[in-house]
Image: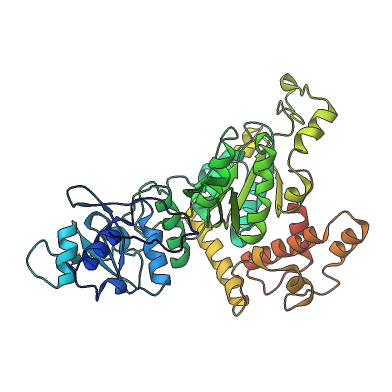
Length: 454
């Protein structure tokens, strides 16, 4: 009789990735295999009836977890060798079948030799399937203020909302935001790649560019928030957008449960999933972009007399109030977007800046912020807490913050809103290569904080 113990018993197990470890343990227990090296190697792989090793789901995060637990070597199916080798700091042994795994542990030579997997080219120029820079912000015409707001949002990783009628370019702007964001850092790249692997995406390269998720408002709550049962959790769109952009078009049309679920990841960078038999936390460090029409019919404020709004004032207010006050208060930039209504607006007077040019500006601004925040737990301006901005090294002269102090005293600005204006002002200063924001940057940040967008 053979007893297999998958410890800890309180943690639900899912998938066939344990097959290889179970088979080798059984062979070692029956003295068909020396057990000396087994505890030194993490074994991951599904075992077929013919002894062939097959690819298990979510292998990349499993290898990453093995490294974090102190393993220096991992054995995986040959088909997964390149994917496992994406994780630095751990030796990968790729084997095609159980016989090869046994031969490797016995130290035998000849029969179907197991081989260390070679790490792929780590250069930033490599792109995972599905990644593209085809969308360029130069496609946006007649919206220079909106483009500059996107640059500010990208520089500080600020959350953004856009309010405007259909055809104003809200979706066009949001879809171009990832193109001006810098490449992911090595740690961010590993996280984004691990999340993609959990979703069943086969990987041969690390994800280098910030992900972009744009779920439809009719999508289920679980598909956006994430969920599952006691057998495991699948990441939703919020987690898949980690270190990238989550775009909710027609934001008031989303279920209230989805919108309220955004509040936790916006503050903590992770989302907690609670189920009857399982509780877990998933990474969700997102940059949120909301877009909304000004009313259900979308024509409120339209200058076109042929498209008069049919909604009552109460209907308009109720429509926008579907986005709760607490979520609304967590948005750093609130942008009103209008349709390009004249040929003069289309004439930009010269070539529009490209995504690559603006990405360089954003990268330079982030470098200034990172240098200023060196030695702190924060990397970008949106992460800096209010007490540091108001009373620490980031404190600004009272003369410069007088307009904010007055708005706070009058109740037209909450303390959270006060802090968010300061964060945006620092991003504007970084883009302008200034040591610290002054009155002009604070005034611009206050305008971008405007209250007419959701």
